[in-house]
Image 1 (cartoon, helix red, strand yellow):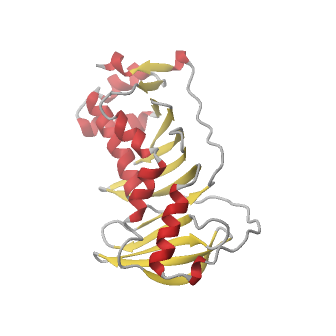
Image 2 (cartoon, rainbow, N blue to C red):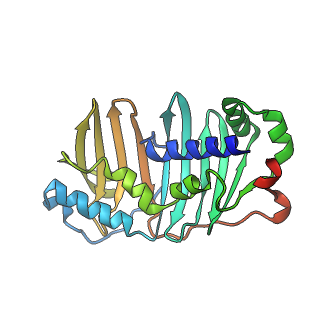
Image 3 (cartoon, one colour):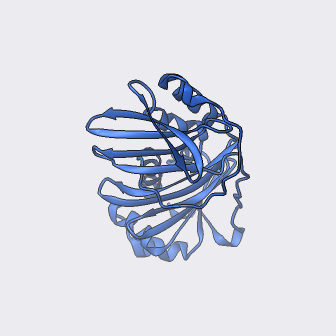
Length: 246
């Protein structure tokens, strides 16, 4: 089953590292105290934004777009403890991922597993029949498990975002992200322009990253900072251990 593991982890990694087109969400605007980061030089704004985002107990990331000629959608909530729950959609199929502690559970519809199986040269119908709608349980030490766990690591996520606000950023316009005031940091590189939106009220969290032009245009939104993450393990009768697929 190793090919399926590797393919799933690559899908997750691609979704994480590519700045994607926003899928949309709702938010409630509440009055917060200004943090005045908009008055700082851009490098200092970037530093405070990175530190604040890394320091969050939890967050949610949403987006959709293209990576390696494939349509990808993501919607994940992650916390500092490493718990994680959400979805990855690829070319019309949808997979669900739950990580609790060091155990990973993966579930997907037929289109999701078919896409993975076809690209890895395994029998899609055999895989679908064996799983029969159940979750695939991936214990620690299994090939690909570490990649998926890293996808649900706040520090690892922020490290990916750092590339958009490190070196050569300029301070842009003031804006709003779902009713929250923000200042933009702009970076131009390799034919792409990236705007990172940093909150100017309460903690200077990164709220949104938008890239236009270049090889990976798109839009990623970060919300639900410090909110509880609902990650629940599926019942044992709904689980297939990865060892059964080898």
